[in-house]
Length: 372
Image (tube, rainbow, N blue to C red; front, side, top):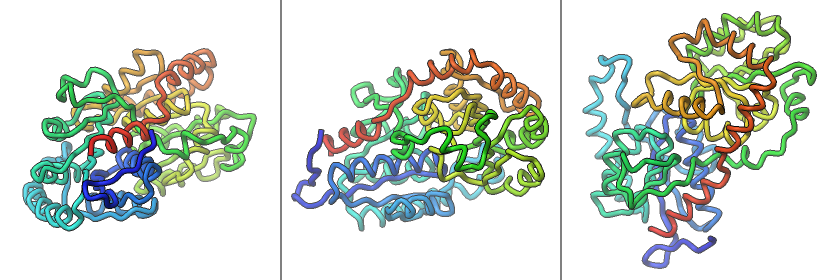
């Protein structure tokens, strides 16, 4: 449905999109903004993110304005680091009040991440329509609280009424970047892009946009074995592990180390097997591109939702799961076995493709335009 989005005064629509922290929140947020902008190019957007997080760089690169607030999430691995959290939360509400009152949005969209909660909470107090996109099959506590007063709640999975009011839920799937959904890159083009050989298998290792220490350490230990088995590697390490990975790969042909991969459509096209965290957005992309995957869920994710995500696909014979606690000893043997097992790879491809959704961003944009 293509319709002009106008506010009550007939002027251009103004929308705030709040959230971030990781690529799993940022890229879907940008996809939603792009879909809304395609429906009405006059729509004005303002993103709100957490200062110091990657959204402060990625959102302007996508052509949108962003304001940062002083907010942080609960650190589950080190309670001592949470001492300043109450002060930051209070400060963020004052910052949010200024941002919302100055911008005067017609709607506010929350995509998850630290900054979503104070922005949507204040908007709800002001009577501004609010929309939540819950990407996981297990909803976070902040979204559950916000869902009570939200206008609509867009979800990726069925049976989410155990977390949200049933009448507000719309199943849309998770938005995937258009550069991936619309990619026509061939394997040959992608291999040439990375300087890899056509006649050897390729494993893509991605620990999320920020990297994954346990996965990186497992690959670091097994990189020589991987090469000896005639397997090529595209290894996204994150910034913190980049130097160590470069040293581990030194002198080894066919091992491509990259702190961050911008051209993920090329990386997916080149890969025969993927190793990934089990964040909802990573899963959404992998379902669309249809690749055999070994998921290593991040154990400190809220409500351990990454494990729930991975188990759902494993139960459907659509992927394999390796627990983070055993990753150093089991990941490399598991990926070697999967690379060699063509029957299993084909089964994974067939089953994971069934779960791919390419137009979630359009569905979400239509719901927002119809209800604000």
